[in-house]
Structures are given as structure tokens and as C-alpha cells.
Length: 184
Image (cartoon, rainbow, N blue to C red; front, top):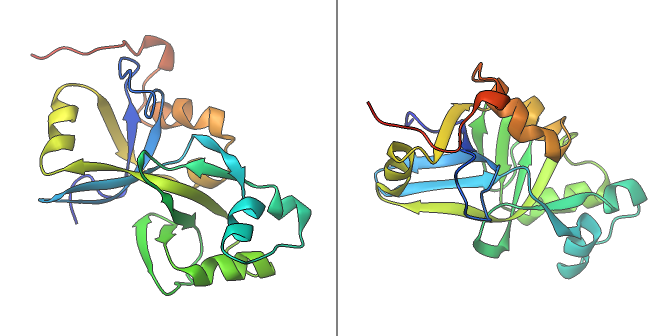
């Protein structure tokens, strides 16, 4: 396991890219070839019902059908990723943090539509991707902070509170965080 896997990447206030401004990205994979993460605090324009309808599934639970789908990142926004809790693994699942797995197979969406999917989940379209060495360069340029991921931040907090809570997990007062850092 890489030193950055299972970490949240927290966008520094000076990161002006609109895809990541005040973003929290769960890093799912990091190796010599690059990195892949899912942004967890950018609600998108679609609901779960919209996505299920596009793949020929329906959901009769109105509360579940109205769940917001997130913008997981700017790369391949047509691809879906389900972050979820629980021990059950689906056709294409892997653990990406303490109490957090990611699944990309249809079977989890079928279970969610039937009402017997994971208790806590977040559906995201797209992902954040970095080429070999790119994320490390961005971290040296003070674009990101990292902290161990927490399932509670992903599943239990409203999206607008996730950035502040992730920063607080580092023991940092959000009000003292500067837009850019320095180098010693």
C-alpha cells in the first residue's frame, strides 16, 4: 500500500482549479503510474433516479431515488463509482479506507435500486486522476494536504461540512489556514 492510499486529499485554499476548490478527494489508488481519487463534497446535477433510469433500473423508494449524485472528478464523468460501507463485496470492489469500499459494477446499483444495497453509500460520476509523479509535485507545491480517511466524513456529514471537518482532522484551525504555503 502506498503512503497516500486511504487518505483524503484536502485542497488548500489557494488551489483555484474549480474542480477542486475546497475539495475533499478520497484517494483510492496511488502507485508509480499515478493516482486515482473520488471527490466527496461536490454534489452534482443528477439524482440516483436519473442514473438508475439511464441504465434501465428503477427505484420505488422516493427518498432513495432523490439522493444526490456527486461529481467525483473531471476525468471520465460518464463512469460511476459507488463508495460504500459494509463488509459485502460486489463484483468489482476494493477497500479504499477504514470502513470504505469502492465498487464500479452494476450489481451494487441493482441492489441499491431494490433497497437491499449498502446502508451508507455515495454515488459519484467521474474521478480525479494524476499521472506518474503529478500528485507528488502538486503536494510539494502545497496544493494539497492529506489525512487518513474517515467513513463518517464520507457518509454522515452534509457535503458542505466535509472540507472543514477533514481539515480539523489534521488538528488545524480552518481560520488559520493560508491560501499558499512556503518552503523551508
